[in-house]
Length: 162
Image (cartoon, rainbow, N blue to C red; front, side, top):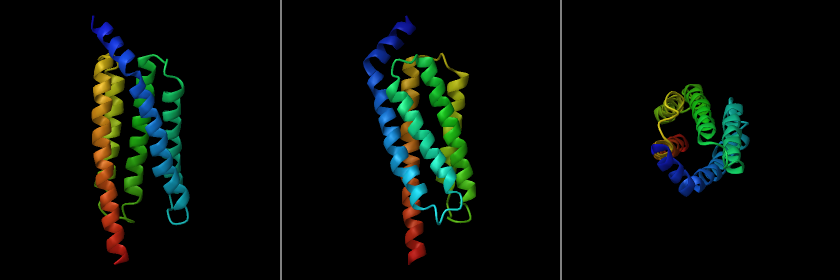
């Protein structure tokens, strides 16, 4: 019965996963790839940022092009994506620590991404409905942390130029 409820939820909401894929493409292009290419002269580790952006684009394309994948396969793709980007965010937080202060938001975003990915691997059959809730909560928390990070960088940039 729980499986039927999950299948019904996926039938009604599959387009949300496709939309998430589109947003992942847009986010990857605008933030990571654009920043990496634009700042490659001043960022010593711009390749990591570019890699994360390309990885996000690939994850978004896979989610958008193959909506018929089983929920379990998509779950593992999201889990791998979350763990890899979380590791890259942690690496970036420590790599630029001397360059810009207050890297806690980027590091915390990385830790949350890794925990989210691990939880998806540990509890893959927790139900399709629960994964929709987890993805939504993860997206909200991750988005809030990146908004905090954006304001931190804006504040830091203003203090440097002042």
